Structure formats: C-alpha cells, structure tokens
Amino acid sequence: MSRSATLPPIRVAPETKASLEAVLRKGESLTQFIEGAVCREAEFRAEQSAAITRAKKALRSADKGVGLLTAEDFMAGMAQRAKAAQQRIRKAVAAKNKRATG
Image 1 (cartoon, rainbow, N blue to C red):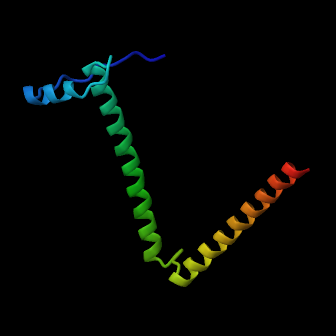
Image 2: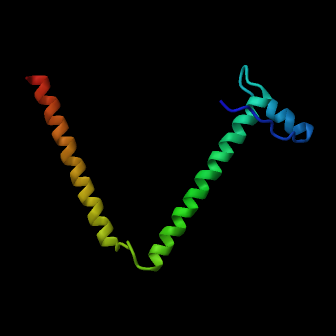
Image 3: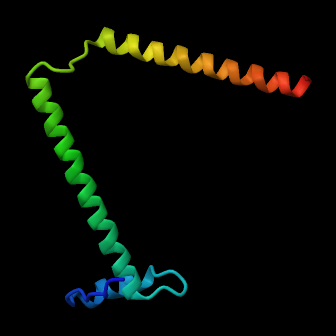
C-alpha cells in the first residue's frame, strides 16, 4: 500500500470558500470535496487527451483515404445492424413466449 501525499495548499477568495462550503453534502468535508474534484478533473483530462489522440489518428487515416465511408455505405451498414438487432429481439421474444407456454 502506498503512502498518502499532500497537495499544495491553495488560496481562494472568502466568497469562493463560502460557496464551496454551501454545496457540501451532509458529513462531507471541504477536503473530501476538493479531493473528489481533483480526481474527477484528472480523469476527465486523461479521457480528453485519449479522445484527442484517437481523433488525430482518425484524421490522419482520413487524410490517407483509409476507412472512409460514403453516406450510402454508412446507411447500409446501419440498416444491416438494425435488421440483425430486430432478428435477435424476435428470437428472444419467441424463446420467452415458448418458455411461458411450454
């Protein structure tokens, strides 16, 4: 188990501190609130960075003409996926009805 670390103290205006304290949940400390906010922001930024990396890769692929779909190809693929989903649903409903009557 790793040891805990301390984040640097931050200075905020008294109004900011008061507004933060006003939104604390029952039993929640300001420290817990700040720790949660810091962790969520770090996770968000990591996800954002990964999304940007994926987008840049997709743009490079598009520039090379790799993986581009026409609107017709896209719609055909979506229609195929919808048809497959309908078949799975019909099959599941039929199996459920068979169990209920059998």
